[in-house]
Image (cartoon, rainbow, N blue to C red):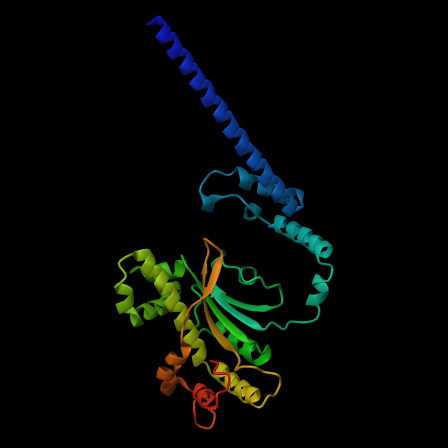
Length: 316
């Protein structure tokens, strides 16, 4: 019995030793990881104050929305210092970067996206500054009485002559979630969300058939993107430009290959970083809606019908 007790005691002590050694190793690994992340932040920040801010973020263990950052600086001097560091870094890494921007402002893509901070337009499609003209609002809406958005579209189409317009929604959209709540979010936000509720009303049968709330939200994100694309097709400035470019392309003028601007429905997944194009047949939508919304025609026939009859590139 004494031998057994002695062996049990030795085993217990050995297990405790292993436990404490493992705990020390795990703590060392955590500290090493924090140090590694701190070094990474320091390299990116390249300034003493920014480094301190990044160090606080590494050590922070509280709620995400209460995390420390440059926004804790009353005058935001850390952001200005970070800007100087970024400028110096860009001059070293890409000496011609700012010289290229001096050439002018001639983007060929208009991006209409959500104001959500997790969806930076240029970065997620790998485009540098100068190539994408960006408009953002809550839930990537195209509302015909929103003079801001309408002015952006007019400038992009008439002046910049963009070739493509992308409406990009994203999953886990706060605007979509709020619109699905029967709660008064107070004006003017509530007035804005009503436009999303109208989209829900148009697709109520499909959406109500989805029992899972999150899946229903994701589907509404997609349907909302499609509706906003249709709202772009309805605008006079886009219809006029598409008719003009159709005629030029058909006559082989200006090197145009399709009617411009093309409209695209994108959805972005913030948790994976993947953007995808929704499989939408806009031509079928336009066939149904043209008797109401068509403002410009060629030879008294709608644009896409002429393209079909003449075999011309068949592009919407």
